[in-house]
Length: 375
Image 1 (cartoon, rainbow, N blue to C red):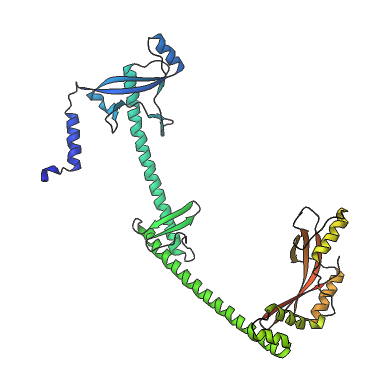
Image 2 (image 1 turned 90 degrees about the vertical axis):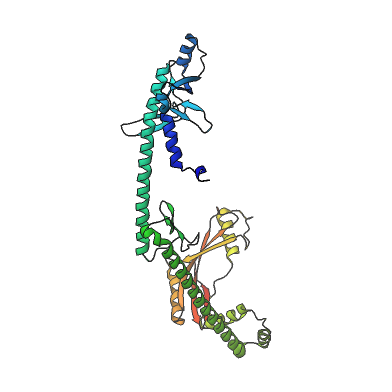
């Protein structure tokens, strides 16, 4: 059993020794493939050849030139004519697929010279590739080291949450794409990145959970306060019908909020409210501007975009001052409403104005908008 297990190095040494033991007079049948250009095909026909573009020959290569031969996994030996290797400058060697092309049918010695040149350039090509890989590996290691140091020294940085960081692996988003850190394969500070990324990820989850619980508690407290205020108002000011529906849990909250709003702005009830007639106003505007009496704008067709106004006319400013003086604890804002048609956005729009008054009454934020003169 012991003699059946041979180390790989012994087999490789034995193969090398057997290759050196081949008599120098022994030859190997090798296939050679090359191409002929049109001029080469003509020359081949003139010389009695077949004139084909792809030429295949079988050569006998002596043992002293076996370095010019490659053998594939199927045992087929071929002369090293392709892939071709060319030196484009004093340093760089590039690989070209396909066999060489000749304008004249080459001699056997020409093919050997081409294979020898290919052999030398292939060695240079592989050496350059190895150096390039080493350079890229070194550059990648330096980049990963820099990313790791920046991450570990900057507490605000976070790893990507998809995939979820683990103590063994995490991903960092960079300008050149995501970078994976693995505690099992990385070295130096990069090895500590997954554990720290996981710690920060878990800490963020705990903080977010605490914030959500706090926000939920605030919302529940606000809801309870609103419920208490509504119950108090119903008991003091509600009608019999409202008390009955409230006791049965069927009184809409909106109905109570509307009543609270009317009470909050009762002192300015004489100031006209902002009319919610945007569809009819836009329809009248479009008919007047276009001269088309068949234009119809429904409530579903109306599109309203509201923004804070940047200028006010004298008449509008007078309404604002009146509201501020009579409601000193109220925020008053001039609003600009841009009306347009959803069905035909190309039609000219209409801009109307209103004054929005906002008051805080207990846990409720109550709003009411008032009409102002048009410009």
